[in-house]
Length: 349
Image 1: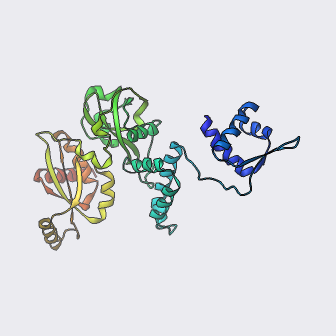
Image 2: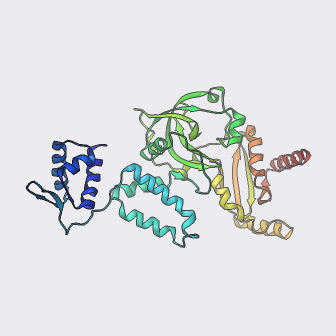
Image 3: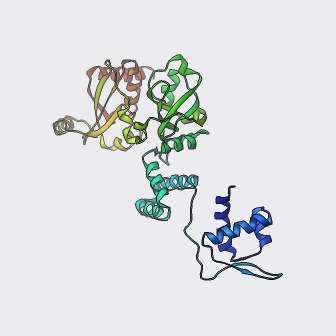
């Protein structure tokens, strides 16, 4: 425990006890007499209203008019509290009948201005859903801290084989042989999020000079480096992820109509190459005509994006998981491939 943390604990101890001796202070914090005396001087300099009672039975007491100052939190405590409050998001409005925004606003009022700024950085650099437990791994906090502070890390990453990667939810990008074994990477994280039972880190790989997604539980170690971070990435967060992956010349664009009831779940699982948006007016009319022909009502959302030819199996499996909630508008080839996928499943019954 460093001196700053000890003084915070000592300040709360003094307010709680109101009266204490030098020996009690030494025993409580495991410090020497000289250290205890220096700490008392430091507490008085910080504004703690102490009065010294002289004599054999003397000691120190906090003036009765004194009240406990605002609670101060360490960076790790602020992060832990923020995550705990985010966990309440799914419970507060329904089970507890308390608006989440009110809880969040009051929390921001009791932390310092620098910590409020830090929480604002957390806000768009971390995303998770309390109803979906996720495997974090040993380095999640280091990855998040680097994302918030714009640091470069050297990580040892145990990447899976390509097929296992797609099944478990890693970035659907095909992997080279060097990706399939534990390897050192220099990365600049800018966001972490939980999805489908795992935590993921979005980062820029300085060695490969490209955007990557890493599964956090496969990060075996993570250490800060002296590398200069890419300044343009310091302001990036989850809202910018879709701008980092550029399609190749052979990439195939696709568009799907989405049923409203699938929108919330789909937003949780979008890949950077995908976007969910309101349908433009001509397509709203097309959706209404489809409803009249028997399609699911209210298909006024559009899932759009692109995929590389070698990712066809992945995109077909992704769309198939949503069943009748998604209707492929284009390309026709993707619709045929999805139809073949369903026929193979039926044939296997």
